[in-house]
Image (cartoon, rainbow, N blue to C red):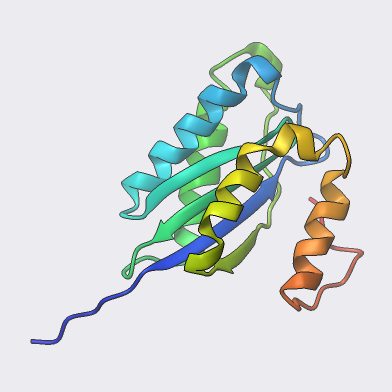
Length: 151
């Protein structure tokens, strides 16, 4: 019998649709906690979820039996449905269609955890668009700027 041993860290990023209401500061902690619970139900392990009113960052330890697309679908679909129950303000809430998923080496886990935990401070200096584009460049991901961050 063979044994599959793996430890894969993923940094997942997604944002609200441009036509969607943003998440009020008073609801952010609950939303992040809920998204973390959703990650755990997929067999992955959430390490941290954070972000600001218009986007989410999640660092997860990825399951050897899951797909990235399925985990993100569970995070977005179920959290979107739940967010709509928080307030009438969120009646038209929706996440973007796409997402970014970036591998993280063991040596960078603490750095990414701190980065996610300091999102409010970070976004006083850099907007989400610039942040996201810098991830795409850092990971050498080819993209068409017309479609990045579009709904």
